[in-house]
Length: 101
Image (tube, rainbow, N blue to C red; front, side, top):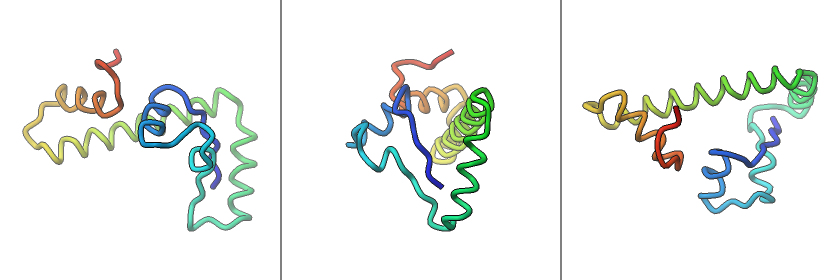
């Protein structure tokens, strides 16, 4: 799948903080190794057919899922960590100066 990413917000801090620039091809294009060109084209057509609000909803859901997985990983590595401390660590990892409320 090819996913064009907007380099903004915490995504920019995360990607650009790892030595990638906004014009870097690795930021603009990501391909799944197990997706054929035909399947990728069909998938892109489906994404392009979505209304902007549907794409935003999808992006927000993926972001929520990723944050949940990240917090689970933090708590796995630090079993005694309270939920609030795990969320604070998530925000630290994302480069946020303090948790966003």
